[in-house]
Length: 350
Image (tube, rainbow, N blue to C red; front, side):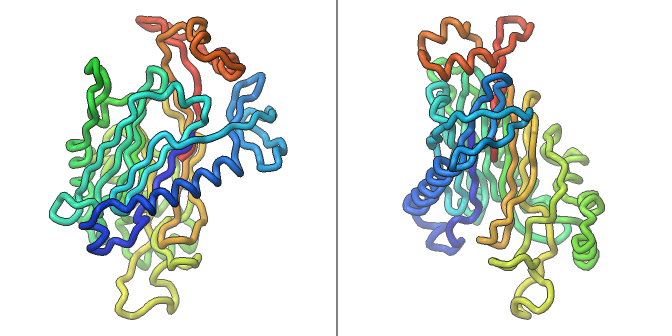
């Protein structure tokens, strides 16, 4: 399963913030994603270990997570996408999983100008896969590099959690609020900075001392203090700060003689983050990409998630009469709980 987010896919000028949604831009992005996923990448199950892996366009073998190999091609399709001003979320899944996904819903929260416009805020997506609920919260929080500005970002997070709401469903048994879901992932330009003098930050970046930088990371410190996202998880950050670069450059803003004297300085920071909440999520990868299209470097992650299935797989086979179901069915494990729950592992990337 693929989950893509984009921050500021349109310029944040008044006509875009105050105007209607531009579907043309999101349509173009979805077209690019579709071409990329279905041309370059296929997720597949290994016949023995049932692990997910990637293969190249020419169908060459690529090693899976457990060292096994196979050649089963897969097709991806978009199950839901939504744009709010510059925030865009697009969720893609393998076609064989699509019949198992239900109760798709979107909730948008604007936290920008006048506390309501969508230049800041979140677009959240909810769905059920088997009997397990997922919620992805794509956010762009308040900016500001001064000490104390993190309180505005904390306030944005609290408002997003308070105002985000999904339909209960016909039986009123579906999760309504963000934290009601089994698996929750919050990601985007969270805008938290590093609480050190700019000169010190640049020196530590030059030396690649990520540990010393992270000790002063605002997001981590706010979590440790219990001010926000208490009990949430984030993978180890072993990559350079993702903000702020000159576009089409590997040089941070404010370095050397680039830019104009009137332009504001921006100390490097890990503004772009992926954090998660849920007992059965396991992160396999957390890193950044080197796309130079904006002044941010995008971050990406791969997770596995444990899924619950209350139905008997033997009975479900009548609903999914395919070779694919045979492979999925044998991947279940039985857990001892109050009721019979079959478990399987799903890998997805962000």
